[in-house]
Image (cartoon, rainbow over all chains, first blue to last red; front, side, top):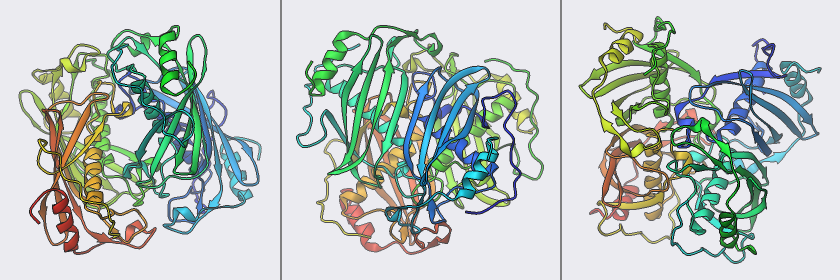
Amino acid sequence: MTIQDRPTAPSKPGAAEGFAYSRRVLFYETDLAGMVHFSNFFRYMEEAEHALWRAAGIRIDGGRTEMGWPRVSATFEYRSPLFFEDDFTVAVRVKAVTKRTIQYSFVVTRETTAIGSGTLTTACVTRKLGQPDSMRSTDVPEEIVARLRVAAGQAA
Amino acid sequence: MTIQDRPTAPSKPGAAEGFAYSRRVLFYETDLAGMVHFSNFFRYMEEAEHALWRAAGIRIDGGRTEMGWPRVSATFEYRSPLFFEDDFTVAVRVKAVTKRTIQYSFVVTRETTAIGSGTLTTACVTRKLGQPDSMRSTDVPEEIVARLRVAAGQAA
Amino acid sequence: MTIQDRPTAPSKPGAAEGFAYSRRVLFYETDLAGMVHFSNFFRYMEEAEHALWRAAGIRIDGGRTEMGWPRVSATFEYRSPLFFEDDFTVAVRVKAVTKRTIQYSFVVTRETTAIGSGTLTTACVTRKLGQPDSMRSTDVPEEIVARLRVAAGQAA
Amino acid sequence: MTIQDRPTAPSKPGAAEGFAYSRRVLFYETDLAGMVHFSNFFRYMEEAEHALWRAAGIRIDGGRTEMGWPRVSATFEYRSPLFFEDDFTVAVRVKAVTKRTIQYSFVVTRETTAIGSGTLTTACVTRKLGQPDSMRSTDVPEEIVARLRVAAGQAA
């Protein structure tokens, strides 16, 4: 874990609660049905999770550290489709923490339209560099949770 | 819907129940943690769903028909990682059917190792060609469900 | 073609010549070798091309128009790898125009490091909505070329 | 490098010269224009390259070895689009070898339709496990080239 000196980004007022990550839909994220392929919402959730980490001043695993965060489960409920070049926002919060996992919740919106919502549950592991099959579950560092909650605008 | 004349593919004996779809992990499906990126399991489930449709002798939406199957929800539980060039199997079954949705369940294995399991719930819609925002919910055709169940080795 | 009223974005001083599009490397764009998978540079070029179109106040095909821009050829030369969360810039220019094609050139950099460079050659086609196999080659509208050149900081 | 005991797979008679790799277009490989996104052809070339290596009884870098094959350049010329569920074949050959690089050529066809053709040039490097930025160029092992040429049906 590297503590960085970037300031905490406050969540955008008016948006869903939590840290707000925004971007535009890219051409190759659409499929022949003319809308964003459903699998990409799992990538959008991860992008928002990583943006939250950066806002919290900590680095998610960059493959060069021994701590990793593999997924235990992932869910998404689809409400309305996203189209090419749509601007959308993913609001992310820390939903639940156990001794060895962090669960995030996500709400995706396009302006005032609800696009969908989901969750990611990640386990904290250590592993030897370049040996992905050496993963072992370990305790979630308390400081990480505290920093994420602050960055998401939640009571720490 | 186009009825095709391909024979029903029986599920592989010894595998998880349902129709079995198998393939190998591709290089670009891995990430810097050295294993398959978690979002790709949603693509694997869709591949198995489409293979089940082909086995059932029906074509899923190819963008040239007015019937489509957007996702209502998607879930996956991760048990063990998949690595580059691993051969894996996705067993798919029709789990539940409502008037306007089909829910599939999936079990992913690598030989005898449980990799994970998930669900996809899809709505039946009609739409005008080239107008993805014209989708309207419609009833699931009974014949499609009957054919899918037979192809998955389930009592029709 | 929809003419939009967004102002032309000037290219960033000090960067490679052309319109500058910048973003950060995402986790799922890396592969098990720990760097961005080589195929993603073709997606980065397309993103820069579309950003240039937006800067020029015109919309690239959104699937709802009858004009499209399929690729005729694509090339990329790799100089140095990109890693997770690297900030990079793609500078795009109109390199050559024929009666029925536009060729763009791209230079990718991370601060002062040359990452690589490439080209995309696109044909101008018309097609019927929802019928991708109805494509026919057509003349490139002169106004589009003029606008793209201005947005890329090139003499019109 | 691990030498495996799989037999050399002969190239399919009647196809383009070289080792033939075949599969079906997946739904998420299409875009809103209704055809395979142009970037995916670079992935198809890589898949064929890796299939050639398997046919040659050698393993491409699996992230757990110190030898890697990053790309130096990649090109593709598009002739005709590929659509959802199309069956296609990629024929791959060793086109040119220098002291430190291997260049492959690829021809993509759907039955008798020419879809496109391309090249990949790869450098041979060594690196420390888990340290992607430790890459150093090294000589291409002659045995690898000989095996690849045999697997591609070329005079060794």
